[in-house]
Length: 306
Picture (cartoon, rainbow, N blue to C red):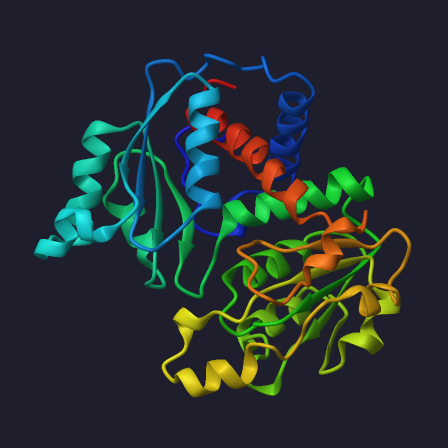
């Protein structure tokens, strides 16, 4: 069903296709031998023009666990892009060697452009402040695993909602599920983009904005924390002023529901105090592992071996 298809933004896969991926991911989680060696002889090209730890390593771990191999670069300075090679040429080259490409770029729209020049599926691992759809698969799978289903939820997004591509992708994806309410907590300078707000309203998703995390905490079923991203700011003074706007600590956690799920796409800087890690509601490290299972399901599906 997904064989040969690219994933550039969350809407590229239907709700039914997404849920089928989650079914497959859960099978893999239950039995890690499921699909093992199914990608033997296949190659994943990792083209990372922007730093990454979890996304790149989880994709590589996923491919290796499926029996395939990886090639690519994690630093654009070590690629011919540093010599002026165009993205189109880099992608054409990688597609001639690999069976699937995963790419991260600081430029919005780069993944879509790459998909137009590639002869193999392109998986968007983040394009600037636009989208990060494989993180969205990770986030939705985590919610499903920890809440049982993705419906009848109040989901809070907190932090940098202006530049946070993980927020943009997840918010749009949640609009496809029943009775999901979205609460956005951010400084005035980092509010969620209007096009995301309009997409939610168009799907009749109840959507509110607030500047007060403490007031929002008691009503949340899921809290999605994000860091204020230094690399998105042109002015370091603005970053310093805003970076500690919201810090989740034990005191604020005490205001939350007993079955609250706290997520974070990571890396964490200081927006979640270390003391929160021991709270059973903190799920961000579980979330990282679910990301590997989600990407195993995705890779095996677009390569047509699942």
